[in-house]
Length: 450
Image 1: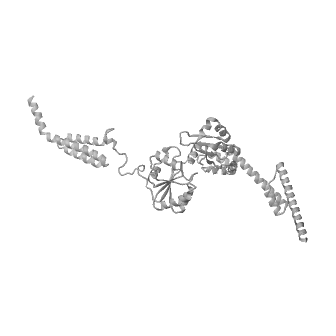
Image 2: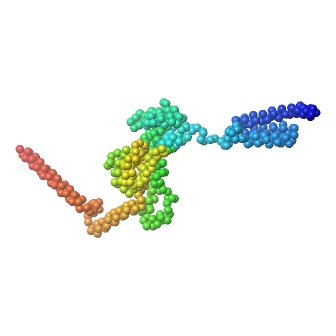
Image 3: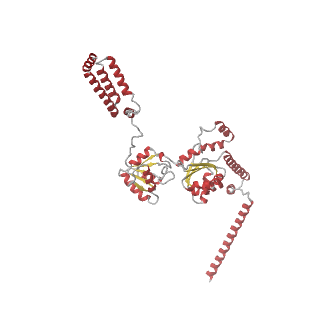
């Protein structure tokens, strides 16, 4: 027993130096690994550490050196889950630039048109946040609302907001041009959505462009495009049925040519007028004659009045009402104006319209309505052609023929009687004016004699 203990002591004393060297080298390798992760140069330092460990451990035993080398490679290349090495491992190349974390470069003397969310703060783009953080001034039409919005996304607003409206646009324009020419950068925002689209700001952009100031756009949310996307009123020629379009073209070329105007096109009219007569004129002259969807911004308190006018002029058109888009109380209802009017007249539906913003979409004419319109136009052309043929056959005077062509036929008896009464009244008035003229002339003659 004593002899065995003596042999063990002798072996430990002989290999004590090698054992200490192995401990030092392993500690140094672990330190180099942590430095490699910190310095983002893992390949070179890993190779260097593995090479040093393999060479120094191979002095004692080739098999032991090979095992230590494999163990070192596994330790550096396959870290355990949750360890220091795994948390700091990068999945992208070391020299690559991440565009999502790189700050946006702001040009001096530039006016940025920045889009803000229309309801959901998560719709804020990274570029919009960078621009709002780095610009010197923020031009807005509503300073309290913009200040609240900036505070929600942790952007400093103190001393950076400039109020702009139609009442002070002349004074504001000179101040803004002076600041931009002095090398300052600005951002134009509105309360929600994209500026200059149904909002104040287009006049400011035109004035800045006329002064030679560079204007840049930062795209983002817009209620107009969101309503178009969720309503489904526009379509592409690639989505239409080729067989039905071919048959339609063979039956009526004019109908297919009119429907081809609806391929992605739309009309944006901002907001309908406040007065009842002006709204009816726009609905009759613009919306009814259009062959594509028409979009309007609207406020809740006028929705029932607008639906009444649409039901009066366009009772067969499909109407889409988009309320509070991207918000918690988002709603979308599509039907004819008469049915929508009955729906929103209920008490539970009327509670939805206490606040918020609306987008009103009036769909284009369907195939039956377009066919009726084409038939009316064809009947007018046939009537005009028939009248021209009659005039050519009669060989009447050129002036009389023009008057007859320009004067439409009156088929209503009531309208004919009204026109005859008007002519008699005009003749009576002219006769009375002639009598008064004669009396005045006689009086002048008598006065000259006296």
